[in-house]
Length: 166
Image: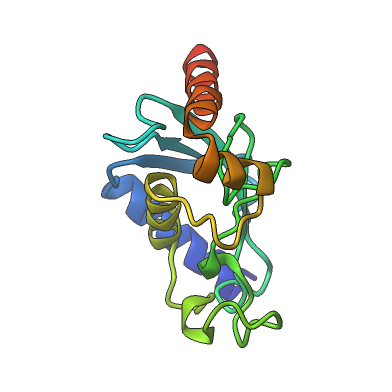
């Protein structure tokens, strides 16, 4: 019997196939596993990431939508809000409830109303405007603040590499 999570994910996938959203594409890594999606994010226009095609894996927990998925870039990514292993660190992907470190409001964290589309649009927004106050990648955040030319060079290399992978 299909779980609530798998039915919801099937519906979201079907909706995205019928009504694609600008900026990303999504599909299953393996047709037998609705809980693991392959996504490609197109570098947003007028940003350092413009022209890039960044691949990521979105992994959903069995209790989705009560808990958030994880998103991990498999393409090289240099960004203050992306850990060196590719994991994306944005508030809406953090578990619901109060932030133990007191940095985020509960209202900024995961809620079950989020969809694949809202998550992807948040990641596109993250690429457009990094949050260097609470970085996952401290080195990238320092470069973003203090050595913008170095930061731009590293992002340009990631964009070029993503284009070569097509």
